[in-house]
Amino acid sequence: NPSSGDPFYSGDKTVTTLRLQQPIWTNGRLTSGKSKAVASMTYEAANLNETSLQISLKVAQTYAELLAAYWRMQATEQSLATHQKLREQVQRRVDLGVQPDADLQLAQTRLDSVKSELSVLRSRVESLLVRLQQLVGQVFQISNLLRHVSDPLSPPLSQDQALATAIAINPSIQKALAQSQ
Image (tube, rainbow, N blue to C red; front, side, top):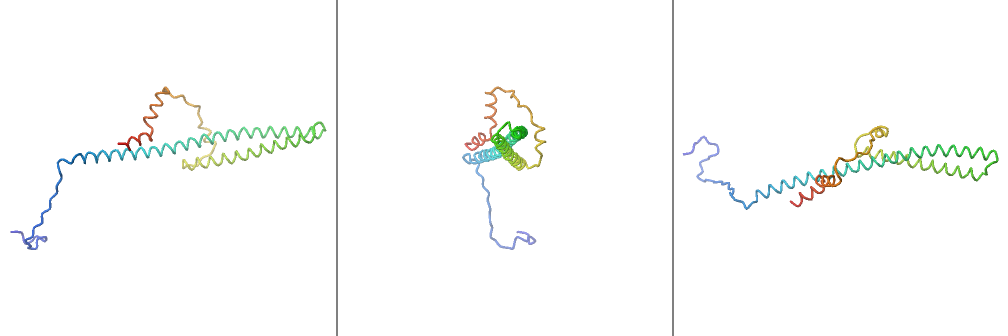
C-alpha cells in the first residue's frame, strides 16, 4: 500500500515503466564514433596549425621584403648623394664653359630619376612596415627590426633528413591524413 504522504502518488492505479537499453554489441559503432571524433580533433588541430604556418610564412615574407626594400632605399640614398655631387660638378663645368648645357640637363634628369626612385622606395618601406605590424599585431620601428637581423644559419641536418622532418610535421599533410582517417 503506497504511502499517502507521497506527493507524486495521487491514488491512481496506472503504472508507467521506463526502460533504458544499451546493447552489449553495437557492430563497432561506439568504437568507430570514437575513432571519428579523434580523427576530427586531429584534423581541426592540423587545420589550426596550417593556418598558423600560413600566417608565419606571410610574416617572414613581409619581413624579408621589408629588409630588402630598406637596404635598397639605403643604397638609393647613397646614389642620390653621388648624383647631387655629379650635378654640382657638371654645373661648375658648364659655368666655366667647359661642358655643354646638354650635359647639365642629363645630370639633372638622372638626379630627378634617383629622387623619384627613392620616393617610391620610401613608400614601399612604409607600406611593408604597416603590413608587418598588422600581421604581428604590434607597433615597432624599422631600427628595432634591423638590430635583430642575423646571419643565415646552416641546418644541422642533411637535406634528406630536413625534408623528411618537414614532411612529418607539415600541417597540410597531417590534415590530409586526419581527413582520410
